[in-house]
Amino acid sequence: MLNVKWGLAEVVVVLLGSLGVAACSAGDPTQGGAVVHASAGGSSASAGGSSSSAGGSSSSASGTGSGGLNLNVDASSAAGDDSQGSTKVECTDGGDCMCPTLTVAVIGQPGKWGAPGGDTDTAFQEWLNSNSAGTAKADVYATKPTLTADFLSGYKVIILASLSDDSNVGPFWTFSAAEVAAFQDWIENKGGGVITLTGYSSDGGETGPPNQLLAFSGVSYNTDTVTAQCLDWTVCGCAGSQTLSDWNRTDPVISDLSSNVTWIGFEKGRSINAPADAHVAATVQYNNAPVNVIVGKVAGAGRVLMYGDEWITYTSQWTGAGVVASNCTTGSYPQDKYQTAQYWFNMIKWVQPLATCFKIVGTQPAPPK
Image (cartoon, rainbow, N blue to C red; front, side, top):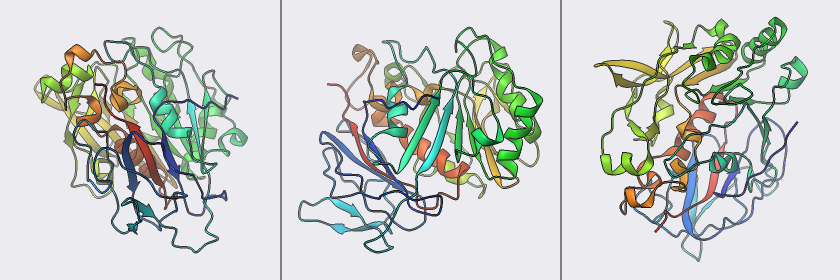
C-alpha cells in the first residue's frame, strides 16, 4: 500500500462529524495565494487559527482575477473577522470539538497528457492529503489492489483513476467475480462513495474496468471520444481544455454538484449511459446533440458518480503550472476561470453525504506571471 503525500498547492481539509475521531487543529495556511473556504452543510470546524488572504476576499463566491482562487464560504460557518481582518471558521461543538478522518483511496495510474507545456496530477493529489493535520487521509494505489471486504472497509470514498498498468496504453485491469461482488456490497450496504474518471487513453478498452465494477448500477461509459465546446478561446488556449458549462441545476438529487461552479476543463473524454433511475449532472454538445458526461446514481446506502474525463486531475487546471505562458493573458489562466477545487469538493461531498461537516480551508498559488 502506498501512502503518498505531494507538495504543491496547499489546501487544508478539515472535517467534523461522525465517521471517526482525530484532532481538529490544522494550523495556518501558507501565504501567497487567496484563502480557500468551502462548506456544504453541517456544523462548522475550526481551521486551527486565522487565515490570511492574498488575492481577494475569502467570502467571494467564486475564483476571480489573477490573485488566486477563492472558493465559496458558507455564511453560516463564518464566525467573524479577527484582528487581522481574516475569516475564522469556528467549531460549534465547544472547545473539545474533534474531527473525524475521511479516508480516501485513489486507485489506478495518473494521466499522461494534460496541458501542452507538460502536466502532472500533483495539485489534485496534494489537495487530498496535504496539511490536514490528520483530519483527511488519502492512500494511492498505483498497482492493482485486491478488492476484498476487508480492504474496502478502510475507506469512505474511492476514486477510480486509470485502472491499468499504463494509463495511455494499458493493459487494463480486470476484476474477479468476488471483487466485483465485494465492491457492490461496499457501496450498496456499507455506504461507500465512488468517483470514476476516464479519458486517459484513446483506447476504448480503458472503460472496461470501471464498467465491470459498476455494472450493477446500470451506469456505464461509452467508448466514444467527446469534448466540450470552447466558450472563451483566451481561456481554452491557455488551459489546453474546453469548457464544460452545461449543468443540471434543477434536479435536487444532483444539483449540489454544480454549486458555486460555472466552468471546469473537459477535453476528449467519454459519454456516459444513464439508466432511468440515475441523475445526469452535466452534458456537452457533441455532433449537435447533448451527451451525458457526469452521471450520479444513489445505490442502496451508497453513491456512484461517473465523470467523463480526467483533466480535472491535472495541475494546470488548478494552478496554471504546465500551461504555455505565451498562450495566456492575465485573467485567462485556468485558476482564474475554472472552479476545479470547488468541483472536487462537491463531488466528494455528494458521494459521501455522511461527511456532514466536510470543510476546506487553505490556499492555492496565484497564477504564473
